[in-house]
Image (cartoon, rainbow, N blue to C red; front, side):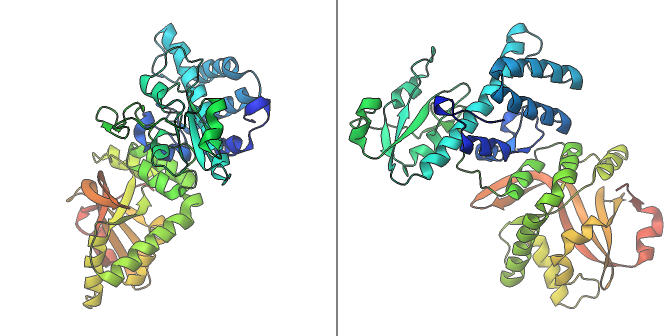
Length: 411
């Protein structure tokens, strides 16, 4: 599955970038933030794990053998086998375009990410040169305008303009020690960035000249924790797909999730001040998602979060000595407790109640479903619709069985 670099030699850094990607089902290419593509192999509209796996293998095989034409042959067989109704399949142009864009996008981004890593690992190459491919028959005006531009490697330009900068873009970056050294390879030391180079195009959400979803440097975010990527993806996925995704990847992310959860509980219990932070507590099982839908409560996504505001309220109940309150130790261990908890449909509130064995007795948390909330994601505040724990406490076994309010769900 080796990726070829200059002079036909194996390009180890690009190969490593491609091999480290995890498979994420998706409805469209921009389901995840641009930089998250460094960790994810996605094909717009490919929502089944086995379909993604076959496409991934086909790209890898084609790189070592017949290139694009080899991939086209694999692609047609994969589409037939899985019955995948991909966008463009209704026309000859679409059937030619779709496999090419899938193959070349992965090829060029992997190459660019490998190149980025090489440049970052070469401290003597203090300047980077932007080169437009002269063989491109329909060049983009802005890309031509950047050709020959030389900037320090730490210039903010490279955070958003490191190519490829759109579908089919074949621009590249060359590292140099001194600007004057670049004249022989197309560099222009006297060239300056055009006015307004970083201005955002409202149609794409990226700087002008950059395609939608391409305003990032491939490879710069390859170390992003998988947990961040998966959590970001979960609330964009339909609940059945998200539940299946977590069932497959959850065990591998357990440590990262645990660290994020511990951080939330520790900060909330120390400051007792809410700041709209949240952590992933649980992901509903595929069987639970299906059962809820059958009972008239379809989830928009399968992820379940706890915000610091609700946690702080619960901790105040604990410190006040309320007999039915969950202890801080239980809240600290909640993700583990939810793995074996029994889910119930609350027929009054149309929510989920998880019941579990706690050291002090039988515990429960009530989950508000399909709820829209603002949550801080690092320095950014995002509005998302998901499922949030609203309260928790100790209950008597008879309470969960009394009155027919709570209906046990599959898990």
